[in-house]
Amino acid sequence: MSNATAGRTSGRVHIDKQSPQAYRALVETAGAARTVAEEAGLDRRLVELINLRVSQINGCAFCLDVHTRAALRAGETTQRLGVLAAWRDTELFTERERAALALAEVTTEPADSVAQEAAYGTARQALDDDEISAVVWVAVTINAFNRVSILSKHHVRQTP
Image 1: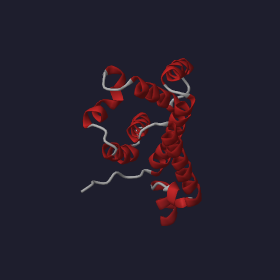
Image 2: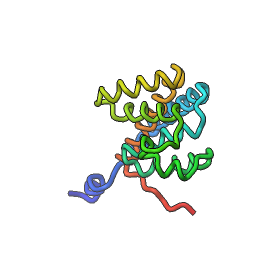
Image 3: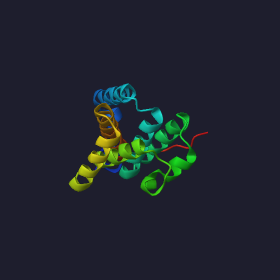
Image 4: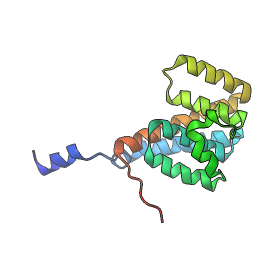
């Protein structure tokens, strides 16, 4: 096996760098999802909670790092961030946030049709059609970024 072949098989391809046109399209899609969320009235804190919860489910360290800092900049509290993985077991999240988080979870793990129906039913009571659409688009785009980062093995670097 040549050195070039060995390097390719042992390392990961950073697909965002390898196929920049596809990555730019994903960035544009995420920008459109953020605009949809803003127009639907979802505040930046809720968008970041969705990004974080989906990234927790997917185990994407890189996106967790990025979106934790973004959530803090948006005014989210460390207490709520600390318990986000167990949001159902706290009283720290509003009905609207709970509906959005449940919908984001079933967008991430759609195979459980019973959970999907329950989450969608809750979302219908707490969110309007524009908000539901925005939550799903935010969840879809962060899921895509999670896969890019996980499969590319993007590293989390120490921040100063």
